[in-house]
Image (tube, rainbow, N blue to C red):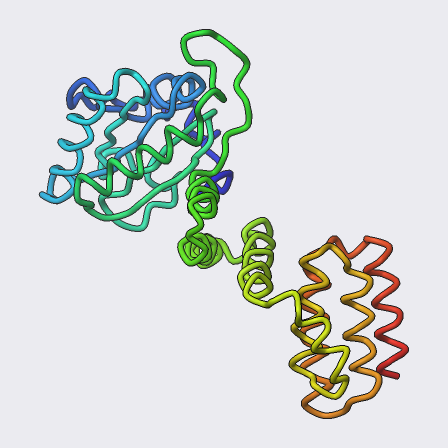
Length: 283
């Protein structure tokens, strides 16, 4: 959700709006700017939109109230009765109740929908807190810093643990939620390449050189060369295959070459040069 929602319309409540009551953490349109937007410059604020008619959402609010009391001020809570604060629900694009959104630095950072078990809520809160650590004003009054998306933090943490499958699933989930997220797409391409190339032995280059007609060996050798930071050699190997093949073999080599191109900025000189060689090989 990071950066996808404009909350500026909630800085000015409509005339005649009521504070709504509802307890220590209750927030309405009247005090949303103070209790959520301004407060989120200091610590992340978890906004819980619920309905009194939904027992599951009421129970989730109670869980969050208990957890924030145990949180030692590392985050704050804002509970919003959705039916009496429709502008808040609309601003967040809420599609169901309950919905929980973390706001940091005045911007939505992460969210989930539906009642969740307490261990899962705790895990989500930990990811939010880790993502903003040292980047908000906090107690010291420092200038707020850009906040990391906790979804990417979780993916990177999986990579650090060597959990390639977990990291891939995390990036795929981001792309499913935000099909236009180029950062996640690029990360997923890099990860899939590494997973494939690291499984190929260095001897693949010698194998391919000894058997030039073996297309699969050429693809494997190109991966090893790329892994060893030799993009020119990798590209040239695949372009040579494309020049001398046709049909499915040529398509296979061309597809792999285009995948490798996508690992880099298309304006990189060696990518531009390789694309020219590819055009010449094809036509």
